[in-house]
Length: 57
Image (cartoon, rainbow, N blue to C red; front, side, top):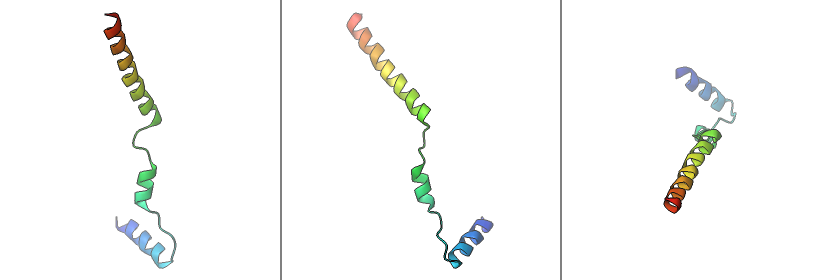
């Protein structure tokens, strides 16, 4: 922690731009694309089978 603070202070004193951690956190997606695809597959598949059960049974 102390090392990172010293690096930040050094960059500030040299008038270099610092990285905005809030921006980097927002730019990353918390779920991978394959996880979103799998979730959609399960939900849409469940709806399809439920509709088939209601119609045919």
